[in-house]
Structure formats: C-alpha cells, structure tokens
Length: 187
Image (cartoon, rainbow, N blue to C red; front, side, top):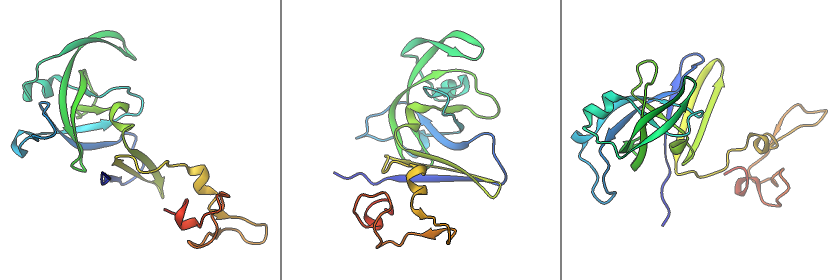
C-alpha cells in the first residue's frame, strides 16, 4: 500500500537562526484509535538536527498529564543529568501523527516547549534553504526521495560558450543512467 507523503513549509523573512513550527502533543494512542481534536495540545517546537531524540518541557508533561515510563542519562552541553522519559503522540503541522514516540523531559530555550530531534527528522525529507536572504524550511513524511544537491547540480549543463543550459524533460539525464531526465532526476 502506497502512503501519500504529506509536507509542510515554514518561510521566514530574513535569515532565521532557529527553525520552528507548531506541533500538537497528546498521550500515546493506538493508530486505529486516533485522539479527538480537543485532546491535542498546541506547542511551539524547535527543529534541531543536533539532537538525537525529541524533548518536551515540564509544562507539556503537566498540561498533558503524562506519566514517566523510564529514566535516562542525558548528555547536554551543560553536562550529564538524569531525565524522565515519556511516551507521547506528536502531530506535525502537515497533520501527520507520530503515534507513540519516546521523548525526554528537559529545558528548551526561548518560547519553545518541544524540541523535535533526529528521531523524527530522519523519518522524512528535511530541507532548509536561504535564497535571497530568506529562510525556507520544508519537511515531508514519509521520505520520497534522496535529496542530493550534487546530483541536482549535474542537471545544469555547462559549456565554455554557454553559461547555463537547463536540461529538457525529454533529454537524456546528465547523470548517465540512460533514462530520460523526467524519469530520473527530474521527478
């Protein structure tokens, strides 16, 4: 069964040093029995590729009436600490729900109450661009392609006489696969 990829995008005016989005948190549930909209609590989340796992604050624990399932040693820039671990469900801005994911309780800077780590980021396609002085952050799940800027760069044919020629959709793909560009890197 093919699963339809779902995406969201956050655009910032100017270069953003932090990537954020809204997320919704609730107690864990079985995918066959999703929560009611009223059970989902909205929070600001920071997306952090430097974090191995996702984190929630004590405020989220209290507002969602969560009970710890274990304790784990956490390594941060400030040293090692013991933190409670919770099982939660997280709904991303594209309405995709991660139904049962372990999160650690911790402190998060700024206004954010949730930190989305690589345990969620690596389930999909994650991209950040800074074109014309504006940051654009996109995420889709599940992953549908390998984003490879080196291969994408090869789709622009360069010659000493012509600065940049775009490859046509029906032209052979410049990667050398023998396929038409539209059936290879042009998808």
